[in-house]
Length: 468
Ligand SMILES: Cc1cc2nc3c(=O)[nH]c(=O)nc-3n(C[C@H](O)[C@H](O)[C@H](O)COP(=O)(O)OP(=O)(O)OC[C@H]3O[C@@H](n4cnc5c(N)ncnc54)[C@H](O)[C@@H]3O)c2cc1C
Image 1: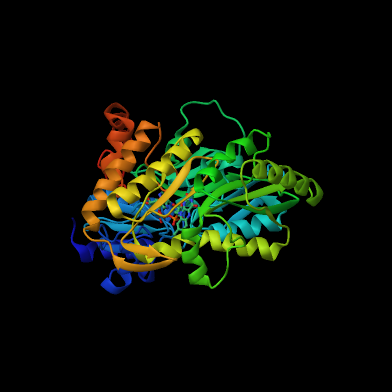
Image 2: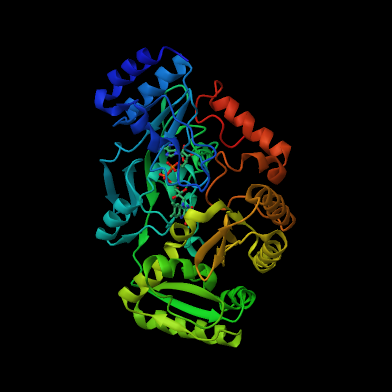
């Protein structure tokens, strides 16, 4: 580690005095992300906020020379501890790289700085009468962050995850070179796909400074339906019959009512159905209201044939917005009591079995595990709670939570491996899940990843301590 004052002066020479932070109180927000545990929170030496790709490259060259680790950071909404820095390192925050966003209607694409937020993206894209389907839950997330994490969200079942929309990236390498990877292209069979290597690399292979994304025509209409079931098992089992109608909904989520009760309390709003213990939330998109309504009715009939107690179709925007708000606030509502948030992904056919296993585990180990899931794509989120839950309220603490949770972790992951799944569907490995990567992917695959890391960042200055 070089002399700290000297390092700060050099960083200030690149990005300006006001854009280099080093006092403890201003560093604190950069010591963590939105993951549930504070076990890994670490203060960096400094935070630097460059405003251009060239400044990012200069900072990386300086850090490479001085041997200073760099942790890239978008909005810090990650849930795997990916942007948590190391003590002797700096945080490179992309928050000021947020000026340029350009829609290209002819190529149906958008090119933007990595610090543009999802919220800004949706707004500009909508104004252009176009559509960016992926919707990872927190709209403050930045474009560099969603690409680095290969974020997912509820709409992956029909449209795929972020990686399916990335056409081009501008990246600063570990030795400070600026590379343009991919392009504004729909196809390329031209050499190794270096751009794809950057997607989901969690800041360990390069720093993304600009992103080109594919867009689609905006759907004419969006409709939301809710169907309650007597049991969560019935709700999950009725997803396949819907897909067998040859309809791929925009999103299919299952939500247990005991979980949504926490959000009802937080927002003082009601889930639109009362009967049953779990609901399917289905979102449909299509060219016009009549056709989407026809599809909704077809799905409704199929769900009733498979035990749905009721079918609610929300056509008005306000009603849809209220339902989606309740769904999107689940993490917020549970967060004060969450000890660990699981993000596993299993083959679609294994969801029912895994959820059943989760509930057996809940009983056996004595830790509440409210679970929600992207029911049609196999990605499930179980929240290991540090408190007993009763009617949406957190009650007394769970005794010996830490030991019980490590047992849970082992058992949940073992069940996921048995079913051919992975430990992260969309949040990434970061610092939180890295000890399970070999068990999941095998030593040979992880060794290959390490060889790539070694080739692209031989001195290990980019986001050390993550993934491996
Ligand atoms: C309430 C809530 C709901 C969420 N819902 C979803 C969801 O439905 N689906 C989903 O997938 N995720 C979800 N997330 C997680 C999170 O929003 C995503 O992981 C998002 O992609 C993180 O973006 P960010 O800009 O905040 O990145 P950060 O958290 O800042 O960083 C994430 C990782 O990317 C790296 N990184 C960031 N920027 C760059 C860059 N420019 N170049 C290189 N590396 C970089 C960091 O080092 C880190 O490893 C949710 C989070 C919250 C708080």
